[in-house]
Length: 133
Image (cartoon, rainbow, N blue to C red; front, top):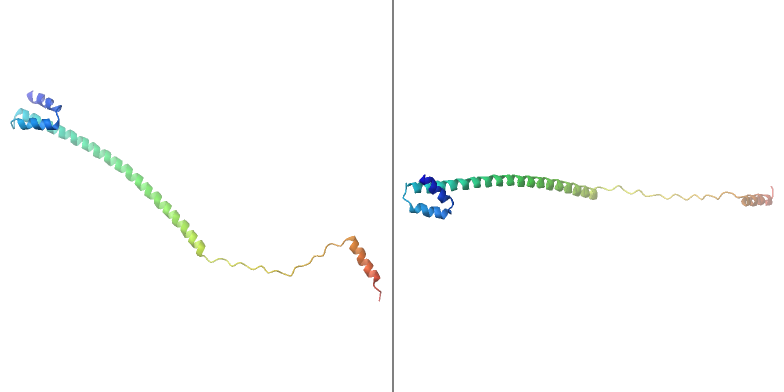
């Protein structure tokens, strides 16, 4: 009974106070064992907390790694797209151009205006004025 009540008494003390208590007791006594039990209990609790923190850190690292992976994939895709556009622009600039065909201007054809009734009358009058052979 004495060891458990001593350990419960030490549970509310700081780690320094437990160490001071342990230093003042006889090695192998009940109080010494209670102090060692309190140290082990606290050590176990700290290890449990450290394990939980390590698990949470691993989970966050996994999530962060997933985001980094997808950002690299998107970066690679945009780089490929940019390369494709640059290649197309280069090929367009360096490809041989089709020669421009010259347009040959042919002698213009003069189209006479349609004959009107006055023109027909004048033509007939001109024929009548000519002497007949």
